Length: 188
Image (cartoon, rainbow, N blue to C red; front, side, top):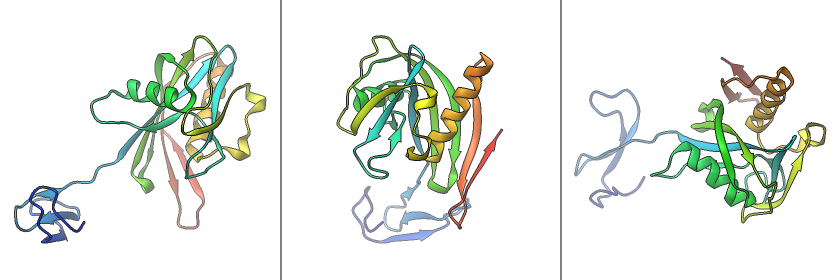
């Protein structure tokens, strides 16, 4: 941070403010402390009949890889609205009957994923601005080795486990990336 967004000063210091326990950017002129907080990602396992909606990414990171429709929550919206909006933006599909399915912490990138199950009532989807392609697929058609992110693999594994059991549960867990780039998953 080079300038204070409150007063415009360039007198910014990275320090631990009094009474705090973390490094923060602090304006030494007006006293504003800038807090950085995790980003919330909301998305859907959008279902139509026995198939789920996948989107091929048209943006980085992981351009060309498959994913579930998901993205960053915006100010002034609920997580359900964010998940439905992302489904429409990425696949022009209208999600309804959203039910919270999984909450996963990704502390190494300061994100929290909140994934919902949802219905696509008319079975219509086409590529949105952030997708190269969309497809409704059955479990055996999922390109497991070409999924964009570990959280997408984890979410789909949990979904199909629950579907086989005939009962959907709320899942909570954590995914971290080790310094050697290996992925560590914990289910709570």
